Image 1 (tube, helix red, strand yellow):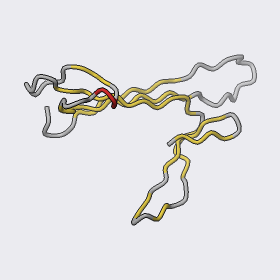
Image 2 (tube, helix red, strand yellow):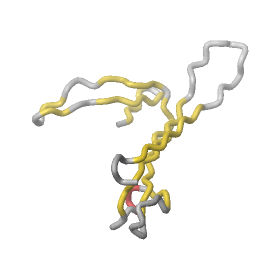
Image 3 (spheres, helix red, strand yellow):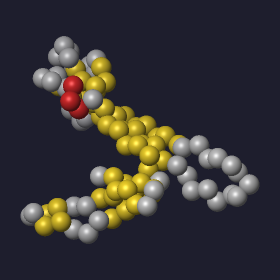
Length: 98
């Protein structure tokens, strides 16, 4: 879940147990984007055939998940005019599916 706070975005976590929400916890500040895509096996051969968005999965079997997180580092050096965002991409193969 993203929360917008005074011009900066934060990635937060809030657990719900037995319909009771716990307090929000900030996991990461300055988040610009968090995107999940899904690796699907469209021909049932057990191999990943394509990466698709959640709304495009259809009846295909999901065999992997790709998470891409983009965040902007905090500028601590006043001599630098611009700091580029950093992107971390991680692919996870679902156990026993590939």
